[in-house]
Every structure is written in structure tokens, then in C-alpha cells.
Length: 173
Image 1 (cartoon, one colour):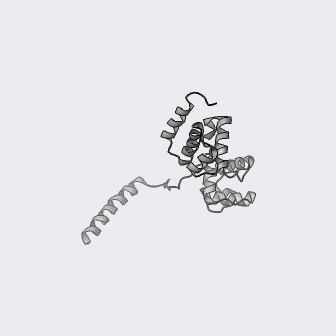
Image 2: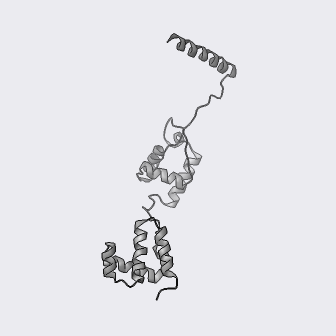
Image 3: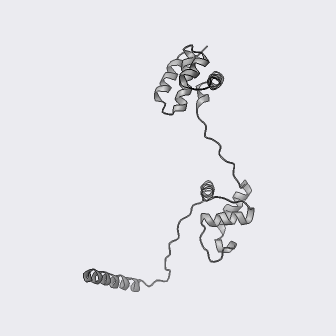
């Protein structure tokens, strides 16, 4: 009925398994292989008899691979692929002030949420927009300001003057 060496394989899987749910599934199959009834296995493991029956049925149909947990699909995307692509192109090609956010030069998650709501009527949460940015390979950083026309001599003089002020304020204490 069972393949040769299958009991030993299941025992090894049980020894390595850290996930309690997976361990119970392996244990149910192991007990079944040892001739226990579904009712008795359910009593031993504290599970429903139907659950044990599903485990055994899955094992018989698919094998031990049928127990490998699958990642849950999660909630479907709110924007369709076309809308996501339009958003991606808009963020890459425009600054927020070019699309109606006056005086703002850098995209933030909150601005993207507002843009999506204005254009598609879909309200995202911050975590959802973070996930969307990640999925679209968009990243954001906080802006740092650099004075393009700064005079290097004046900057050096400021550093010297600042050090003097720091020393004098320390000595005054």
C-alpha cells in the first residue's frame, strides 16, 4: 500500500519539523501507516476525524509533497496592470508639482496615495502603497539639499568661525 521506505522518510521529516501544524500532518500519516484508525488518530492528535481523513486522502493522492505549505495569495491588487503602469510612468516622468501638487518636488507614499485617489477613486493605505512601490521597483529617499552656487571660501570661513563659537560657548560654561 505504501512505498518502501516511506515510514522512515516520514519519521525523518517529523524529527526535523519545527512547524507544529506540519508535524501533526506527518504524525497523522505515520500513525495511519502503523494501522491506527482515523478516529483513534483524531483522539491522539486532538483533531477532527474529517481533518485526519483529508490529510490521509491528500497523502494518497499527491504524496508527502501535498503537505508543503503554500503562500496564501493575499488580497487582489486594487489597481489593474494598466493603471499600475500609468502610475509608474507618471512618477518616473513627473514631479508632484507637475501633476497638481503645488510646491512639492518629491514623491512620497502619501502623495502617491492622493494621486491614485484623485485619478482612479481608489483609496490606498500607507502599507498598501509601500507594497505597490516595492512591486513596481520604485524606491524613495528623503531629499537632501545641496547649495549649487555655494562659495567654497565662505563655507571654509564659516567652519572656522563656527569652531571658535563652539570653543567660546564651552569655555563660558
